[in-house]
Image (cartoon, rainbow, N blue to C red; front, side, top):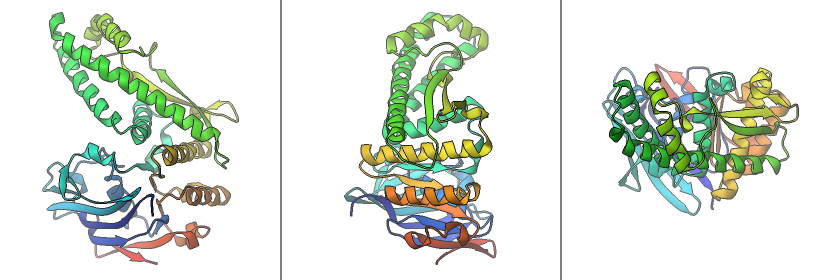
Length: 367
């Protein structure tokens, strides 16, 4: 069977889970239980099968079970298209995460080449009304799902920008110090911008071809100030020209780190920032589904979807529509909710697990 899904997940001393094992198939996964039982911790564990810091952006030390803090380990058997991979991710006593794929040491970035993972968590509900940094991170995760190398080029850009900012803060005016750094920023920055535009095109196409109960969004990439130079040469010129202004600010004011994702509720012509809370949530769900549809075509299989408490914030009709879309996609979607009744319309099509807490330890039971 082709597709992308976990057939096994094992946790050891991860967050509230002292030990846990789940045997799985390709169907959606519904996790229910009281607040604080450890449902979101399971989603966080699955999110580690993609590059980055996971859905909570937590440090390795913060993922360790308390009070022991001995270290933790997450392992999984991942079926990706026509291949099966054994993946292990762990940290010892707060040290940086280690990764192996098929018992061979690997980087976190290499996970992006065999797995695609998307998530929607309650903390993202304010995406459209808070700062641009969160929207850039949201866009970059979608971009990385289509273009795994986007993660590496982003790291290259951020490293070069930190070096340039250090020179700016130290008021270094000798142009020779800036040449190589700005060339690296220009090369990586132009690639970042091109990748983001390509991802937006894929998202627009996935939205246009969808018949869904969730609203479409008109998407655009804007700059906090001025225009984003699109080519490497133009960005290099802009960095040089902005140097004196940047010296006064003590930081780089030109580049893809100043971009912002702008969205409009298409049917109403209303900016996402001005929509109601329910409409903003529906737009987020719509974009995650569009991202998943785009990946199903581009990668060859829908991604793992992590939807934390999504059912509680949708009315019954939209909830049923979401479940129908997930099943039509064929995605292994991991969903959390406080009670099994939230999953009534998908229960016969999903794997149901109850998560409870006993003596300070999370317990996972198949239902």
